[in-house]
Length: 316
Image 1: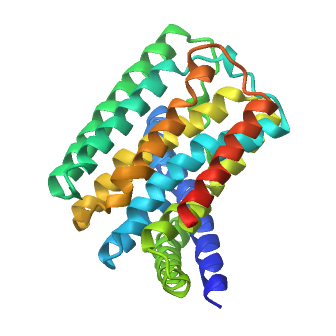
Image 2 (image 1 turned 90 degrees about the vertical axis):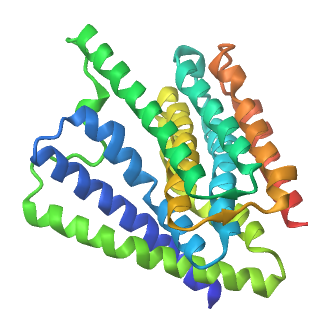
Protein backbone atom coordinates (compact mmCIF):
# COMPACT_ATOMS: atom_id res chain seq x y z
CA UNK A 1 0.00 0.00 0.00
CA UNK A 2 2.91 2.35 0.57
CA UNK A 3 3.46 2.61 -3.19
CA UNK A 4 -0.22 3.44 -3.66
CA UNK A 5 0.05 6.18 -1.03
CA UNK A 6 3.15 7.55 -2.79
CA UNK A 7 1.33 7.59 -6.13
CA UNK A 8 -1.75 9.23 -4.59
CA UNK A 9 0.45 11.85 -2.92
CA UNK A 10 2.16 12.59 -6.24
CA UNK A 11 -1.15 12.91 -8.10
CA UNK A 12 -2.54 15.24 -5.40
CA UNK A 13 0.63 17.35 -5.63
CA UNK A 14 0.46 17.71 -9.40
CA UNK A 15 -3.27 18.52 -9.47
CA UNK A 16 -2.99 20.94 -6.54
CA UNK A 17 -0.01 22.69 -8.15
CA UNK A 18 -1.96 23.13 -11.38
CA UNK A 19 -4.98 24.46 -9.48
CA UNK A 20 -2.83 26.93 -7.55
CA UNK A 21 -1.26 28.26 -10.75
CA UNK A 22 -4.67 28.77 -12.39
CA UNK A 23 -6.12 30.47 -9.32
CA UNK A 24 -3.10 32.69 -8.67
CA UNK A 25 -2.75 33.74 -12.32
CA UNK A 26 -6.38 34.77 -12.69
CA UNK A 27 -6.52 36.46 -9.27
CA UNK A 28 -3.40 38.47 -10.15
CA UNK A 29 -4.80 39.55 -13.50
CA UNK A 30 -8.16 40.47 -11.90
CA UNK A 31 -6.50 42.76 -9.33
CA UNK A 32 -4.45 44.49 -11.99
CA UNK A 33 -1.00 42.89 -11.85
CA UNK A 34 0.50 43.05 -15.39
CA UNK A 35 0.46 39.80 -17.34
CA UNK A 36 4.22 40.09 -17.90
CA UNK A 37 4.91 40.07 -14.18
CA UNK A 38 2.48 37.20 -13.68
CA UNK A 39 4.31 35.06 -16.24
CA UNK A 40 7.76 35.78 -14.88
CA UNK A 41 6.96 35.31 -11.19
CA UNK A 42 3.63 33.74 -10.20
CA UNK A 43 3.57 31.06 -12.91
CA UNK A 44 7.23 30.21 -12.35
CA UNK A 45 6.78 29.88 -8.59
CA UNK A 46 3.44 28.10 -8.93
CA UNK A 47 4.76 25.37 -11.22
CA UNK A 48 7.58 24.74 -8.72
CA UNK A 49 5.18 24.55 -5.76
CA UNK A 50 5.12 20.72 -5.55
CA UNK A 51 8.92 20.52 -5.33
CA UNK A 52 8.94 23.38 -2.82
CA UNK A 53 6.39 21.73 -0.51
CA UNK A 54 8.20 18.39 -0.70
CA UNK A 55 11.52 20.00 0.23
CA UNK A 56 9.98 21.92 3.14
CA UNK A 57 8.16 18.83 4.45
CA UNK A 58 11.30 16.70 4.11
CA UNK A 59 13.46 19.27 5.89
CA UNK A 60 10.97 19.59 8.75
CA UNK A 61 10.74 15.80 9.13
CA UNK A 62 14.51 15.45 9.39
CA UNK A 63 15.06 13.76 6.02
CA UNK A 64 17.14 16.37 4.15
CA UNK A 65 18.26 13.72 1.68
CA UNK A 66 14.78 13.75 0.15
CA UNK A 67 14.75 17.56 -0.02
CA UNK A 68 18.16 17.91 -1.67
CA UNK A 69 17.78 14.69 -3.70
CA UNK A 70 14.50 15.96 -5.10
CA UNK A 71 16.15 19.11 -6.47
CA UNK A 72 19.43 17.57 -7.65
CA UNK A 73 17.64 14.55 -9.14
CA UNK A 74 15.00 16.72 -10.82
CA UNK A 75 17.63 18.92 -12.47
CA UNK A 76 19.47 15.86 -13.76
CA UNK A 77 16.20 14.37 -15.03
CA UNK A 78 15.28 17.66 -16.70
CA UNK A 79 18.55 17.91 -18.64
CA UNK A 80 18.67 14.24 -19.68
CA UNK A 81 15.24 12.64 -19.61
CA UNK A 82 12.99 15.66 -20.18
CA UNK A 83 15.10 16.71 -23.18
CA UNK A 84 15.82 13.16 -24.35
CA UNK A 85 12.38 11.55 -24.57
CA UNK A 86 10.72 14.35 -26.60
CA UNK A 87 13.65 14.23 -29.06
CA UNK A 88 12.83 10.56 -29.68
CA UNK A 89 9.35 11.65 -30.74
CA UNK A 90 10.26 14.60 -32.97
CA UNK A 91 13.42 16.50 -33.86
CA UNK A 92 13.63 19.74 -31.86
CA UNK A 93 15.15 22.54 -33.93
CA UNK A 94 16.88 24.28 -31.03
CA UNK A 95 19.36 25.88 -33.45
CA UNK A 96 16.76 28.50 -34.37
CA UNK A 97 16.31 29.87 -30.84
CA UNK A 98 18.57 31.98 -28.65
CA UNK A 99 18.60 30.74 -25.07
CA UNK A 100 22.25 31.56 -24.40
CA UNK A 101 21.77 34.15 -21.68
CA UNK A 102 19.25 32.09 -19.73
CA UNK A 103 21.50 29.05 -20.02
CA UNK A 104 24.54 30.94 -18.71
CA UNK A 105 22.48 32.13 -15.73
CA UNK A 106 21.40 28.53 -15.06
CA UNK A 107 25.00 27.28 -15.15
CA UNK A 108 26.08 30.13 -12.85
CA UNK A 109 23.26 29.16 -10.44
CA UNK A 110 24.41 25.52 -10.57
CA UNK A 111 28.02 26.44 -9.77
CA UNK A 112 26.89 28.76 -6.96
CA UNK A 113 24.71 25.99 -5.51
CA UNK A 114 27.60 23.49 -5.62
CA UNK A 115 29.93 25.99 -3.93
CA UNK A 116 27.42 26.50 -1.10
CA UNK A 117 26.95 22.72 -0.79
CA UNK A 118 30.64 22.33 0.04
CA UNK A 119 30.00 24.32 3.22
CA UNK A 120 28.40 21.07 4.38
CA UNK A 121 25.00 22.54 5.20
CA UNK A 122 22.28 24.67 3.65
CA UNK A 123 21.43 27.00 6.51
CA UNK A 124 19.92 30.46 6.93
CA UNK A 125 22.86 32.23 5.27
CA UNK A 126 22.94 29.83 2.33
CA UNK A 127 19.18 30.24 1.89
CA UNK A 128 19.44 34.02 1.88
CA UNK A 129 22.31 33.87 -0.62
CA UNK A 130 20.29 31.64 -2.97
CA UNK A 131 17.21 33.86 -2.74
CA UNK A 132 19.33 36.96 -3.37
CA UNK A 133 20.69 35.31 -6.53
CA UNK A 134 17.12 34.47 -7.54
CA UNK A 135 16.06 38.10 -7.06
CA UNK A 136 18.92 39.25 -9.31
CA UNK A 137 18.00 36.72 -12.01
CA UNK A 138 14.30 37.66 -11.87
CA UNK A 139 15.12 41.36 -11.94
CA UNK A 140 17.23 40.89 -15.05
CA UNK A 141 14.45 38.83 -16.70
CA UNK A 142 11.87 41.54 -15.98
CA UNK A 143 14.18 44.28 -17.31
CA UNK A 144 14.93 42.34 -20.49
CA UNK A 145 11.29 41.39 -21.08
CA UNK A 146 10.19 45.02 -20.71
CA UNK A 147 12.93 46.13 -23.10
CA UNK A 148 11.92 43.60 -25.76
CA UNK A 149 8.21 44.44 -25.38
CA UNK A 150 8.91 48.15 -25.88
CA UNK A 151 11.10 47.39 -28.89
CA UNK A 152 8.52 45.18 -30.57
CA UNK A 153 5.14 46.77 -29.99
CA UNK A 154 3.51 44.93 -32.88
CA UNK A 155 4.78 41.51 -31.86
CA UNK A 156 2.57 39.15 -29.94
CA UNK A 157 4.22 38.62 -26.60
CA UNK A 158 3.84 35.21 -24.93
CA UNK A 159 3.65 36.98 -21.57
CA UNK A 160 0.31 38.48 -22.57
CA UNK A 161 -1.24 35.02 -22.25
CA UNK A 162 0.26 33.43 -19.16
CA UNK A 163 -0.26 29.77 -18.42
CA UNK A 164 -3.68 29.13 -16.92
CA UNK A 165 -5.12 32.55 -17.85
CA UNK A 166 -8.87 32.67 -18.46
CA UNK A 167 -10.35 36.17 -18.81
CA UNK A 168 -13.87 34.83 -18.22
CA UNK A 169 -13.14 32.79 -15.10
CA UNK A 170 -15.70 33.70 -12.37
CA UNK A 171 -14.58 34.70 -8.88
CA UNK A 172 -15.97 31.58 -7.24
CA UNK A 173 -13.85 29.39 -9.50
CA UNK A 174 -10.72 31.45 -8.78
CA UNK A 175 -11.29 31.03 -5.04
CA UNK A 176 -11.99 27.30 -5.50
CA UNK A 177 -8.72 26.79 -7.40
CA UNK A 178 -6.77 28.68 -4.71
CA UNK A 179 -8.36 26.69 -1.88
CA UNK A 180 -7.78 23.36 -3.62
CA UNK A 181 -4.18 24.29 -4.32
CA UNK A 182 -3.42 25.53 -0.82
CA UNK A 183 -5.00 22.47 0.81
CA UNK A 184 -3.81 19.88 -1.68
CA UNK A 185 -0.14 20.88 -1.84
CA UNK A 186 0.76 20.27 1.82
CA UNK A 187 -1.49 17.19 1.91
CA UNK A 188 0.14 15.64 -1.15
CA UNK A 189 3.66 16.61 -0.03
CA UNK A 190 3.13 15.09 3.42
CA UNK A 191 1.75 11.86 1.92
CA UNK A 192 4.58 11.55 -0.61
CA UNK A 193 7.38 12.30 1.88
CA UNK A 194 5.98 9.84 4.44
CA UNK A 195 5.60 7.13 1.80
CA UNK A 196 9.04 7.79 0.31
CA UNK A 197 10.66 7.56 3.74
CA UNK A 198 8.88 4.25 4.39
CA UNK A 199 9.91 2.88 0.98
CA UNK A 200 13.53 3.78 1.74
CA UNK A 201 13.31 1.79 4.96
CA UNK A 202 11.67 -1.19 3.22
CA UNK A 203 14.44 -1.52 0.65
CA UNK A 204 17.28 -0.57 2.95
CA UNK A 205 18.32 2.47 0.92
CA UNK A 206 18.92 6.00 2.12
CA UNK A 207 16.38 8.81 1.90
CA UNK A 208 18.89 10.48 -0.45
CA UNK A 209 18.51 7.65 -2.98
CA UNK A 210 14.70 7.84 -2.82
CA UNK A 211 14.87 11.62 -3.26
CA UNK A 212 17.17 11.30 -6.29
CA UNK A 213 15.01 8.66 -7.98
CA UNK A 214 11.36 8.17 -7.02
CA UNK A 215 10.60 11.69 -5.77
CA UNK A 216 12.72 13.52 -8.36
CA UNK A 217 11.28 11.56 -11.28
CA UNK A 218 7.74 12.08 -10.02
CA UNK A 219 8.09 15.84 -9.66
CA UNK A 220 9.70 16.06 -13.12
CA UNK A 221 6.58 14.64 -14.80
CA UNK A 222 4.96 18.07 -15.43
CA UNK A 223 8.12 19.31 -17.17
CA UNK A 224 8.27 16.10 -19.20
CA UNK A 225 4.63 16.44 -20.29
CA UNK A 226 5.12 20.11 -21.23
CA UNK A 227 8.28 19.35 -23.20
CA UNK A 228 6.72 16.42 -25.06
CA UNK A 229 3.84 18.66 -26.18
CA UNK A 230 6.31 21.40 -27.17
CA UNK A 231 8.26 18.90 -29.28
CA UNK A 232 5.09 17.68 -31.01
CA UNK A 233 4.15 21.30 -31.77
CA UNK A 234 7.71 22.06 -32.98
CA UNK A 235 8.19 24.65 -30.21
CA UNK A 236 11.82 23.90 -29.35
CA UNK A 237 12.32 27.24 -27.62
CA UNK A 238 9.51 26.40 -25.19
CA UNK A 239 11.02 22.96 -24.49
CA UNK A 240 14.56 24.18 -23.85
CA UNK A 241 13.40 27.29 -22.01
CA UNK A 242 11.17 25.17 -19.77
CA UNK A 243 14.12 23.02 -18.68
CA UNK A 244 16.47 25.97 -18.15
CA UNK A 245 13.92 27.95 -16.13
CA UNK A 246 12.86 24.95 -14.05
CA UNK A 247 16.45 24.05 -13.15
CA UNK A 248 17.26 27.60 -12.08
CA UNK A 249 14.15 27.84 -9.89
CA UNK A 250 14.80 24.43 -8.33
CA UNK A 251 18.26 25.45 -7.15
CA UNK A 252 17.66 29.04 -6.10
CA UNK A 253 14.02 29.19 -4.99
CA UNK A 254 13.26 25.74 -3.59
CA UNK A 255 16.43 25.11 -1.63
CA UNK A 256 16.60 28.81 -0.78
CA UNK A 257 13.19 28.76 0.92
CA UNK A 258 13.63 25.30 2.47
CA UNK A 259 16.94 26.40 4.01
CA UNK A 260 15.14 29.21 5.84
CA UNK A 261 12.69 26.72 7.37
CA UNK A 262 15.30 24.31 8.75
CA UNK A 263 19.04 23.79 8.11
CA UNK A 264 19.78 20.84 5.82
CA UNK A 265 23.11 18.98 6.09
CA UNK A 266 24.62 17.82 2.79
CA UNK A 267 25.30 14.07 2.57
CA UNK A 268 28.82 13.07 1.37
CA UNK A 269 27.46 11.27 -1.71
CA UNK A 270 26.11 14.56 -3.02
CA UNK A 271 29.56 16.15 -2.86
CA UNK A 272 31.37 13.20 -4.44
CA UNK A 273 28.93 12.19 -7.17
CA UNK A 274 25.41 13.57 -7.60
CA UNK A 275 26.23 17.29 -7.78
CA UNK A 276 28.81 16.64 -10.48
CA UNK A 277 26.38 14.50 -12.48
CA UNK A 278 23.87 17.37 -12.26
CA UNK A 279 26.50 19.84 -13.54
CA UNK A 280 27.69 17.48 -16.30
CA UNK A 281 24.12 16.86 -17.49
CA UNK A 282 23.55 20.62 -17.69
CA UNK A 283 26.78 21.10 -19.65
CA UNK A 284 25.60 18.49 -22.17
CA UNK A 285 23.10 21.08 -23.40
CA UNK A 286 25.93 23.32 -24.71
CA UNK A 287 25.73 22.02 -28.33
CA UNK A 288 22.02 22.89 -28.50
CA UNK A 289 22.45 26.33 -26.92
CA UNK A 290 25.71 27.62 -28.45
CA UNK A 291 26.65 25.41 -31.43
CA UNK A 292 23.36 25.55 -33.38
CA UNK A 293 22.94 21.78 -33.04
CA UNK A 294 19.41 20.43 -33.43
CA UNK A 295 18.24 17.90 -30.85
CA UNK A 296 17.51 14.84 -32.97
CA UNK A 297 16.69 11.22 -32.23
CA UNK A 298 20.31 10.13 -31.86
CA UNK A 299 20.92 12.80 -29.22
CA UNK A 300 17.58 11.93 -27.63
CA UNK A 301 18.63 8.29 -27.32
CA UNK A 302 22.00 9.28 -25.84
CA UNK A 303 20.49 11.62 -23.23
CA UNK A 304 17.81 9.08 -22.24
CA UNK A 305 20.39 6.27 -21.96
CA UNK A 306 22.61 8.46 -19.80
CA UNK A 307 19.73 9.09 -17.42
CA UNK A 308 18.92 5.38 -17.17
CA UNK A 309 22.61 4.72 -16.48
CA UNK A 310 22.63 7.35 -13.74
CA UNK A 311 19.57 5.82 -12.02
CA UNK A 312 21.20 2.38 -12.15
CA UNK A 313 24.39 3.81 -10.66
CA UNK A 314 22.44 5.46 -7.82
CA UNK A 315 20.46 2.30 -6.99
CA UNK A 316 23.28 -0.26 -7.03
